[in-house]
Length: 549
Ligand SMILES: [Zn+2]
Image (cartoon, rainbow, N blue to C red):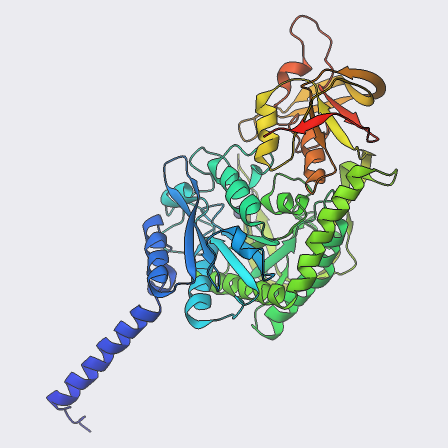
């Protein structure tokens, strides 16, 4: 049968409807590059900026600040979603809203977080999905590593399933891995996020979005809390036992997406040994946020899932975490306020039980990890890493998950640190983290603990531009005279754990390890090693001091 020809008038009306629908869609709902390309492409910096402008034109609830200017001169945008809108953090003092921070693209080859977080912003602003702005203010840095993003290439991460136009590179414009920079703060991006997000807006929860590198499994979304052992234990327990479990359940039951704990096999040749969390080091952004008494989540989307699945999976995870945070806002606000208070109380009078861990061993958490894997074939390759191939043999494994890092060596947590050298690099670095640094206005003669080096080893190759130091030595009680002007960092402040992590001589992420004290450790006129110019005050004493402004 022949289809009757539509009349001209019908065509006009129909065409007008189409144009109207298109105009309505563009007026209401800008699309991300991922969506408009049917998930074949990811966005460039200009696309992200244009998308943000389009949202701003449609919603008064979005403000944009600059997180930092990158090494190559790009302004990295920070989106602020709030209802009513907030022009500064002062506006948040009343009303009890909680701030959440979402960070995408820290590794600019791992791009689905960028697309997923932009979609999330649009849906919250234009469709109230999820409707969370009555209790939350949401900050989004969709393109944190903008310089890396613009070096888009099909050669980047070739093992990853799409997008077809390629992805950016891992390092920033200084060739630094931004997810190793949280303690030394040597990139504009990390300096910017600490100053303009963590210190300025004080988010109670931060999420850092990545893509996995590795083995073959079925679940498209993996995520985990910060396992950093020197951080507040109540926050860690809440994340492990409450938030993680509830968000996994919501992903499964409501969003119909498999989301599991993120970990790596202890032994790639034998998965039965179990999986381990991503590590105890504070240089990871997620752990660093934990060290600052705030909740944080590392999200890793599965690199062998196709791009669309990864974007939608990440978007669903963001929605699920926001919904949980919204529904438990008061509990979370109390949890972080309690952690800040506990840090001050501990620093005011450290007890014997208060320890700072130096080396750790991962112990399994109570809950097991259930994961559906495909067995792999390992094919040796001459002069390189072996090729890993997926087989079609699928297995469900129920495995121990090692994510409780327990200290195997620790020191007494001190009341504070005297810094006996007027080193402005060190002082500026501590203040950049938001630590309160003080200076003696009167000389003080105090019983302190010194650290005398016995061994100083540098790493065999540089790591992030540093020949990292590892030291061994002896702690000794000494009476020491500190002249007026000596710097002092008390641990009786909310960031007391971070102060210890930066200043303990044997801390794996400390300023000593990152070479900030090198010139004092090895005197050039003698073969002996020096004394670490930072002294541990174990019990608080009255000191005449003032805050360094
Ligand atoms: Zn990554």
